[in-house]
Amino acid sequence: MKNQVRDGDQSLINPKYNNNTPWKKAAASLSLVLLGSGMTLAGGYLAGNNQQLSESASKLAVSRVNAAPPLPAATDPNFVIQVVQKVGPAVVRIDSSRTVQSRIPAEFNDPFFRRFFGSQLPQQGQRVERGTGSGFIISGDGRILTNAHVVDGADTVRVTLKDGRSFQGKVLGRDTLTDVAVIKIQAENLPSVTLGNSDQLQSGEWAIAIGNPLGLDNTVTTGIISATGRTSNQVGAPDKRVEFIQTDAAINPGNSGGPLLNARGEVIGMNTAIIQRAQGLGFAIPINTAQRISTQLIATGKVQHPYLGIQMVGLTPQIKENLNSDPNSGLSVNEDKGVLVVRVMPNSPAAKAGIRAGDVIQALNGQSVTDASGVQKAVDNSQVGGNLRLELRRNGQSINLAVQPGAFPTEQAQL
Image 1 (cartoon, rainbow, N blue to C red):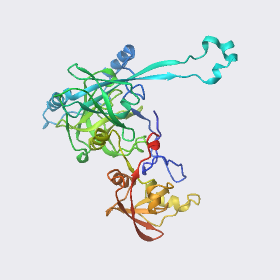
Image 2: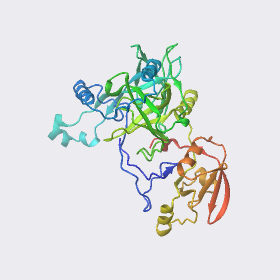
Image 3: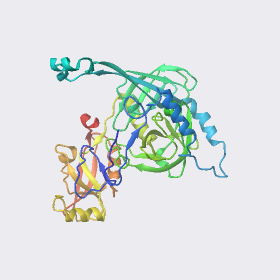
Image 4: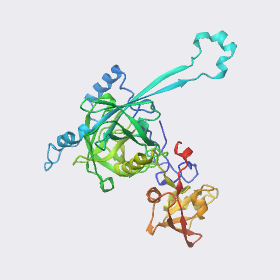
């Protein structure tokens, strides 16, 4: 799965809007690879091929890519061992499979094709696609967090614990916008993880990943938190609504859904993706986001995402200059700071509240905003049908508007 990175300053309250206007410039060109089920994306694709697995493992054995930095003298050299002993039993392997019906185009049923191509024509039938990912137990009664793409479309889900026990899993719910899913197995008194607080993370902290990369169960890697707050657009996944944690702890296909831990053994993120053809660029969903989504999935089996229905971009001197000098942009800006509304979706909550393209959002619920991600985060933390107070600048005038976020349209959530 490949997505090209959009403008790094751009954030979409509605990701359907990805227009290429002359004043936008791509920050980079990256390919994001989700690391879970091989039946849907890029992960787990070596688990069923022993020869490929052997070759890949051999290459990994001589590679120093993503090697952990040396331990500081003041650090307990056994802290990773202690974390693994504490958390390892709660990390699971998830094997999923689905049956796919192969259909041939109607044209191939034409007698002409049958006469001349015969057995060479494709045949209609069924095939089973399999994939492997990771997960972690969040409660002793068998609730497990993993990525939505690990169990996407799965007919069967099999969960294997570190102690060798295997259970049939039931998907309680999955959310494609945040790539979070919850699985339930019938068991009691299971080992479970302790959840940390991803809002308090800082770059440079230790990071420990546990999972099942390339079919190699219970693999542990270490590194640091490279950055926080990486937007979906920045990492090449504009269809997601997540601000990712970036880490250089080595993660590979099959790690998806496994925990990213701090030095105390608390889960701070869920490993999800890497940048293809890059080294040390892994991404995890913050555990606070995963916990918020999982709570709704457990309660109702689905998630309602608040949305306004606008496309926006944080104002910079360069963007202001480009807009004002481009007669085809349809917008002109007099403000120097804030978040510019580039487009408003017809009949959206924003349109009903009176928000217009060209408005500059300067505060939301009394808090100043300077970039689009700040507005996005405030909307994500709001409630469908609740109230958001926006302070805008329009044609040099200050305007206060109240908007009620709506539920993100289901058909768009599947884009």
